[in-house]
Every structure is written in structure tokens, then in C-alpha cells.
Length: 143
Image 1 (tube, one colour):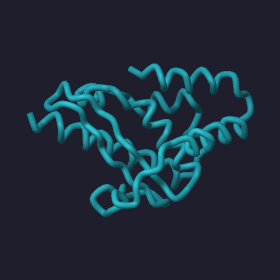
Image 2 (image 1 turned 45 degrees about the vertical axis):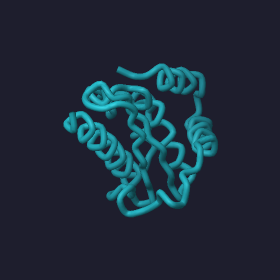
Image 3 (image 1 turned 120 degrees about the vertical axis):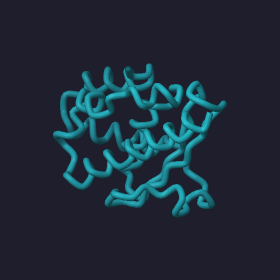
């Protein structure tokens, strides 16, 4: 259950044979990510479990299980900003109920990310996914 934006990334990765090109593409995606205002880089939005500094600010439209999920993210590491952009493409625009249905590990495996990320970065991606799922679940339950 991937979004169209994520499918576009997967298609681009199919054309990029070399992992270095894929890595550069992820970094470029991070550079294109809108910067999170400094005022939102606070403990409440910080993601624990990442080697880098990571903040995720939910932006939910509507309420209950059908609310539309979106978020802004920020990191002090360029590759992590790129990974945030990949996760944004994976989840943005889904209902908060649908966020829970996404098999992030399987979707990200299509990109070959786990094969090329350090153990710390992989743990950080898992922490970001868990935070996203938690934010969506909290909204769904608030109905």
C-alpha cells in the first residue's frame, strides 16, 4: 500500500543502477525537503533512537480514523533528511488508519535501503516509522 509519490521513488531507484546514485538521490530529496522551523525542534517532536537529531511534527487534517496524515521532518544529517523525505512520500496523504496498514519494512526493502544503511541508520529509520505510526494511531483513537 504505497502512495503514488513513493511509487515514483521506487521507479527512480529501478533506473539508478549504482547505489552511489541512489544515495545521492536520497540526499537530493532531503535538500528539497522544506525546513522545519526552529520553534518546532523541541523535545516533544524529537525522535528517540536515532543517531542523528531528528524531529517529526505531525500535521493532521480532520479527526478520527479518516483524518488525513501528513508531517514535517528535520534532521541535522543530510542522508537522514533524505530518509525523512522517503518516509514522507510513503505516508503523506494517507488516512491515519491506513498509516497502520503500511508495511514500511517491505516498502523500504524495495528500495534496497537496508542493504546500504549502517545499523545505526536502520535503527533510526525504524524509530521514525514507529513515531509516525504512533502519531497516526493517537489521532485515530482520539475520535
